[in-house]
Amino acid sequence: MCGIIGYIGKKRATPILMEGLKKMEYRGYDSSGLAVIERDGIKCTKKEGKIENLEKELPTMDLDGVVGIAHTRWATHGEPSDEHAHPHWGCKKDLFLVHNGIIENYPQLKEQLIKEGHKIKTKTDTEILAHLIEKYYEDEDVKLEQAVQKALQNVKGTYGIAVITSDEPNKIVVARMGSPLVLGIISDGEYLIASDVTAILKHTRNVMYLEDGEMATVTDEGMEVVTLDNKPVEKKTEKVDWEIAQAEKKGYPHFMLKEIMEQPEVVLNAIRGRMMEEEGLAHLGGFIEQKGRLAKINSITIVACGTAYYAGMVGEYMIEEYAGIPVDVEYASEFRYKKPVIDENTAVIVITQSGETADTLAALREAKRKGALTLGIVNVVGSTIAREVDAGAYSHAGPEIGVASTKAFMSQLAILALVTMFLGRQRNMSLVMGQRILEELKEMPKKIEKVLKQNDEIKRLAKKYYKSPSFFFMGRKYNFPIALEGALKLKEISYIHAEGYGSGEMKHGPIALIDDKFPSFFLAPQDSVYEKVISNMEEIKARKGKIIAVATQGDKAIEKIADDVIYIPKTIEMLSPMLTVVPMQLFAYHVAVLLKRDVDQPRNLAKSVTVE
Ligand code: F6R
Image (cartoon, rainbow, N blue to C red):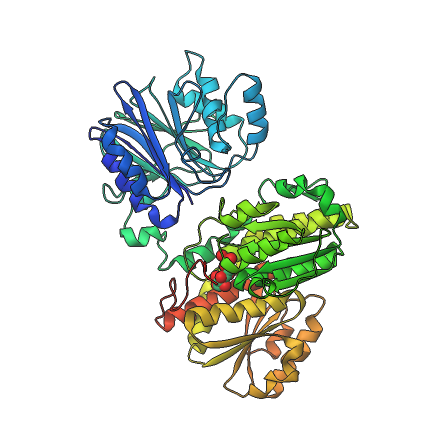
């Protein structure tokens, strides 16, 4: 995700800011920029691509200022470009801002600001915020922190921001709502601000964490923290005892574990601003633009690879059940070479984290050639696939660094639920059903949190089973794709042989492998196929196979059949994969750690598969 760093003190700000940006590179970014207060005003530069591109600009700029802000951007609104990189500024170009997060109501704010005469140049939500602060700062009696406060009272969404102005050259104002910010105290009169503690650890370990709804005014005389409605806040200084490498992973030993743990927030980001609860509708901007064509489609083909393909399979169950449209899910690598029967009444949905997977891109181009409506569920903004689809919805999972996909998958499931609602409500889905799905989707972050709390228990299971040379993963209906995903996660990071099956298929061959040394995972939430899955478990038990079940909270009966049980909270059937997949991810993770595998970069794999 994006990174913020700011410095105020007596030293030249630029080298400190650049060093901070480099420390945040691991987070993933597509552009970077900085603004420094000089004697003759603020100087700013920003560049798409690597930080070296920004660095090349610096020698010509002669930056001596001791106050500045800088940013690494990971695009959410508007493709990666020099123009879209941060900092952004208002009309007078004397107030500069960097921002992490998403301003949800920026279209409304933009419209209002344009009416009031502001000239908006970019597609970003951040530029709107710069103009909004500028508007409140026009009044001569208003100080920067007051203007920021007033502006933020009009903002809906998430933000961590840092603002500077040449009118008050000895000040940085920062504020936080849903996007982290930490204040670092180097000495009296010398401070750093950052979105990520990694960026400041070289200079200080004394920090203050801003909470949501708080803002701070930082000058070379000290820091003052207040709430957004201006109530003073007493803050304590804390000591960070992490090493830099640990801090990059927020203290987690691996990116994969960090990303698994981020999933509650990932779901929030995926659904934020996209739910119209009263109307029971999904608000997906790109889909709304195509709503005429979407109302007419009579079939859907989902194309994707690997984990994204399994998300697509869950989508197939969702869309067929709730929108009544026939869905085909195809491996992109197969789709590109077959003769797909699609036409202008087909919507082809491509699902991809990176937006660059060669097979998925080729399949998309083939679908376009055939005249289908192409829709993307893409994580990386501005990626090739995001640019080439007719419309789409970004997953907003943030950069995924671990090679094994976890949080991107979770966000894809959340978006697919919204897509299902969008299509379903255009057809026969009732208002009440729409509301029910949204209500449950909203609860999902808390429920995922409950599953994550069982991390220690899952680790214990990993210790019990990690020496097994093979595993089966089984489920039915919505949880059949999760069985496939569970097997994929285990094999790709632990190198243990694992296969996923629809549990009804067992007796058609694979059951021959079962003996008392062969463990099977069963995904058995209490849903419409529960009894069937239990029968399949009995078949394994009768052959002395070991069983680990993922079951619904309160299902004590399952303990009589399974050797071990992991419980998940109750939810509606179509959303249960968002809960059952979490133990799969954690189990694979712990087994890989026990086997001393390279969890984040497993052998033979790449994060983005840009070759055929
Ligand atoms: C597995 C994994 C891969 C990707 C696949 C598609 O953990 O990460 O199977 O899901 O290579 O990648 P994207 O989603 O970038 O198209």
